[in-house]
Length: 316
Ligand SMILES: [Fe+2]
Ligand SMILES: [Fe+2]
Image (cartoon, rainbow, N blue to C red; front, side, top):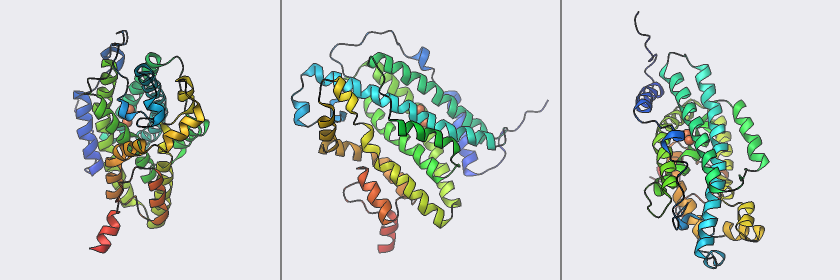
């Protein structure tokens, strides 16, 4: 019997899917067995570098003892893992949709399903991680959970692939810093490493898919999509500031949240985490228009001297 060809068209997206399917075979992990979940924590090592804690650099942070700083980082890492699980559910919906509308013999369909499988393993990994970090989970707000349902209904579009990149590029930036940091717990580093390696494929795919979606979208609709994406970016600073985390760390929740949101070190971290995302979005012409740029500035991720590509081209 002859083998069924899985490559049905030669588009950039399909070619990318062929390459990523090959990489998935070569470099995939099963965190349930590849991570030592029973190993005890190493005393004195951290769960997140101090400099990435939302309060780093504030008076409140400076007054904490060494142990309290480690505990605060531990709870923030737990809260971030909860966000990670929610975001991955949101990202799986469009990939399942992509698989269901594609020819099942195509690399695109098979890659989409492979990415969903990656995200399923990641969500289990983050769930286990939460168990090792805190006595409770810090569930993202109701509104965020409701929006995950909306991603199941949303069309495959520039908006969807931008949102994917927003999650994946930001996490990638943070986890690349943590995976080799020897001041961190070995399990924290192992989780970051698995996620970085497997998410690199997702990022490659989403970038190609975003550029394709932008090319195929009319001007008026793209203007609306840019606004939706910018609105999503504008709430990113709220993600790592969770009053419940501060309360459990023994701090006054609202006053501390306010201090974190105004913390210049936190703003600098957001710029660092968003650096590559902003570049990719700008290259895809997704940061155009006054209101869009205002919302991106609210995200705190734009470089201080940011000038969109379109403006540079117009000035040249
Ligand atoms: Fe993931
Ligand atoms: Fe992903």
